[in-house]
Length: 463
Image 1 (spheres, rainbow, N blue to C red):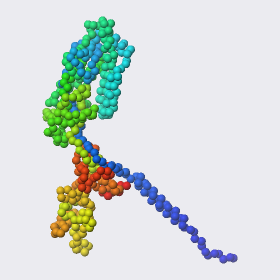
Image 2 (image 1 turned 30 degrees about the vertical axis):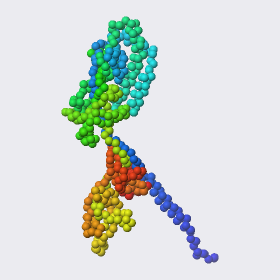
Image 3 (image 1 turned 135 degrees about the horizontal axis):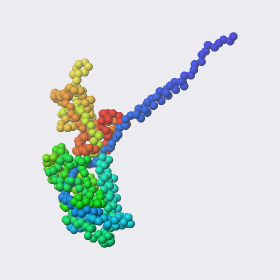
């Protein structure tokens, strides 16, 4: 028999090792990708220069000289003055048809001619646009006000179409003695609603008047038939009017209103800005700011509640989101204990401590300085420990590190990781803050900062 070969052929393990190696690489890459995909994203904001107004918006009550007029007659009514227009003395405001015969003729005229003037079409478009711009889901009453306004415009259009034919209609129906022309006894702006606030004065105000849920506004043109001795319209007889706004002591102090005689205001409804005389009136029901004006009354004749913004200041600087602002604690070390590093461009301190052999030694500590305020450096708490002893250069004086201060600032991410930079706030509202430019160790225009400062920490890698 031939001898069996004792030689054993080894299998080549190279491919198996390569597969295992690629498997580890694949697992590493997969875990890195999963970690990246599931990592909470940090939103970044670029710092720019800008301004904000430190203002407050208030809902005020319009106080005017208003007089309600009542009808002496009962019957079908037609109005001939559009709401918000001025009626002169002895001009026709409305008519009353006591027999109803003229009303029937008017109805037939309405069905035969439904054209609307360009003026009324413009009013409808503007009314719808204003409602769309200022509408809020929390103010359902505005929808009913919109309905009333649109109906009034339609009624005005109808009246315009029939007024030129009115004399012929009266003669045809034989209603000369039963058709009443009612004229304005004085000059004023015509308004067709009542709400019980017509005789209201500032000294009568309390918070219940500002509760819109309890506010009742009666549309006097809702029905085509009038009852004798019922309110039919009212006149605003003076262009001078007031807006009363409720104020707290905190609001008065924050906006510096205590000594103001005039203020600049902006009407939210029409974005109109103007100046108004201003006074603070304390009453038994609270404290109220009174804005006195001699114009723009007509634009708001149909409104009892008027939203206004008081503009008290406008500041310019670096504009940042309020959400970026955080507070951070630092050790405070007097400026005179600082020294320069070897290149003379860095700031550090000489710290005294024991080495491993128990000997007292002095070492130079290069630190990150975040602010110099009132002769004190604010340094990162990671650079020292409580109780460290700092030596003044060329002196035996020592300072023990114990004092802690707080700075407001933001986290910049210009280098891909979070770095705290202090800020000095000039002005602030609910969304933005204006901070001082040129602050040492502070921000500059075009810096990139974390939008939500509470989501990062110092030196956290962002990119």
